[in-house]
Image (cartoon, rainbow over all chains, first blue to last red; front, side, top):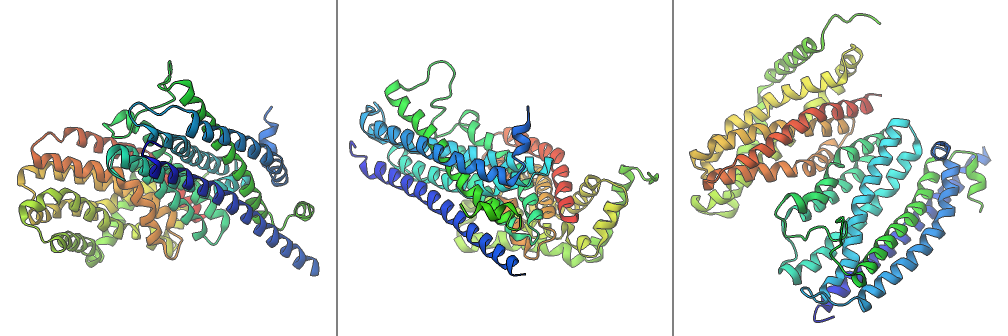
Length: 47
Length: 244
Length: 229
């Protein structure tokens, strides 16, 4: 990287981290929402 | 003609459309980012002034663009919610916020790492950097305001209003390099006429931009589905939807 | 539709008059932000222990940050007491638009907080080593700046009026919006101190003030509508 490796690779690395975090966070959010919805429906079924 | 818009007011429709779009966005993102990153890191020639450090542009420019695009989306979605009383507008606004904030952080960090070899400093209080930092604070403000209200709808409306007030900052960020004597370089791609970069450098950049946009779309759809479920927990359509 | 018989202009005068009288009934509440302003500007030289001549370099920034922070303190009360005792609802039901109400209350608030700050600023300026030649720019800049800040604060106060821990959130909302103000306000005073023309920065401050003054009342009334619904 012509001497700039210690700047370029952390940038791409952090970019990967941010992209991965976005995927993980969105999936987790959706999964948690599904769980809560399931529980809410189960509770209303009991009534 | 506008039925596609009115149908987006329906939560189950939004839930289904988001599910359909996600894999397409993700696939496109994988290919576009894959090509862009590899071509940008390996095949693009080093810049005559900046050497290999210029390759940071392949993550910095797209993330900056997304940070502004996401904020605009959040403001527009909030406005749609306020004007047409569409709950799905508020759902989109809520879903976009953390995504946009993360890309703002990415833009600031990659910009900082690029600044060190190029300008000799990790930070400068120049107009573009400062206004991008203000954008991050605006994101935090909107994300803090919404949950502060006990009534979710009131929180949505307040957050929408705040994001609209803050959208003034987005053109400031974009034009800051034009309006002020800025350390930050001027427009790279968007000049009409000839772009400043040769195709071997430009194509990977455009590909990364497209890839980040598709990725943004994918993650937005994923998060939006969670938002819709959280807001529509009591609705009857949810029962069937979460079984799949 | 009943004829209210009161024009918007007259209503504005009445509301401003009422707010000013209420403010002066509690003079200590008017003095607190001013004293805070004095204390904060004192903190900087104490913390940095510099000579007066060096302090002059930081003076515009210190002055403006202190003005910003002390304005924030008083902004929380812009709508809160009226919201708490139901007066705000009554005003809204009276047939006057929320925009009229927001404008009246914000201007009254600026008169007792921002304008008071501007009047006290020469005292603070002397303590920070700002030469008298820069005072005109400083006073003009602070007048425009505090007015703009009152408008931005009205939006923030309207958004947070119903919230319990609203004042921290208020600062979080208003400060990022106030940053351009700080940059140009301090920049104008800085230029005046160094002898160069502050006209550009002052024009920009004025345009910020006009822009905010025209649009903020609508945003503030929209915020109040959300709170009152």
